[in-house]
Length: 263
Image (cartoon, rainbow, N blue to C red; front, side, top):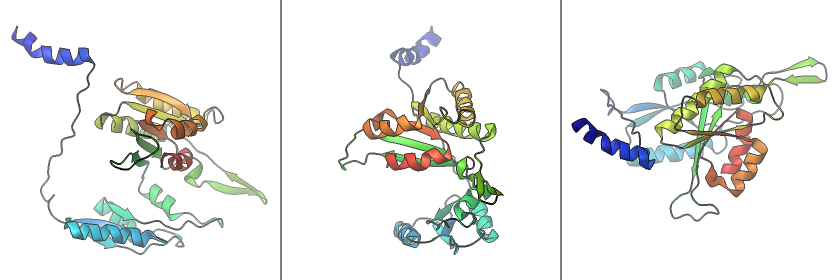
C-alpha cells in the first residue's frame, strides 16, 4: 500500500502528459575558483573592437579570467602551433573574425582551426528578447551545424587546366556524431523537437546518408519529436512561422544561408 501511494504522484504526472525538467548537476572541482586562462585572438577588421569590448566587460565584472593574446591574421598561411597549443591547454578561446582570402588556393585559417581542433559542432541560439518588439513572437530556435565536412571542407583540385573539381564528402561517422549532439542537447535542455534540414531531393546519396543517420539516432530519444524539411521550404517557413522550430540540425553549407534567415 505504501509503495502504491508513493507511485501515485508519478502516475498522475504521466497521465497528465507533463514532462519533468532534467537539471544538469555541476560538481565544483578543486581550483575552480582560481583565475582561468583564456586564449584570445583579436583577428582582423572589427574583431579587435569586439574582443576589446569583451575584455572591458570581464574587467568590470572582476571575472576570474585572464587572457593569453596572440596576433593571428587571415593572410597567414598557417595557424601558429603555439596558438593551437594554447587553445588545447586552456579549452576556451575568444576569437574575433579572421579575414578569408578569396581565390588563389590559400586555405582559410577558420577552416584550419575547425579541423585541427575537431570543432565539429557550431551552435547558434536565436530568441526574442524581453521588451524588444519583433515581427514574430515566441521564437526560440537553436541551430546546430556540422563543421568539418561537406562542400566547405575545402577539398578542391584542378583535374586538367581549366577544369576544377570541388568535392563534397559526407561520412556516416560525422553525420551520426552531429545528430547525437543535437538530440543530446535537446534532451539536456528540455527541448521538444529536432528538425533535420537537408537537400536530399537533389543530393540523394550525400544528404540521404545524413538523414539516415539522424533517423537512427532519433529512435534512441523517443521523448523528442523528430521531423525533416527541405532547405528551400525551411527558409520560407522561417520567415513566415519561425515559432514552429525548436532545435535544427544540418550540414555546413545549409547553415551558412539559413542562419541569415534566423537572425
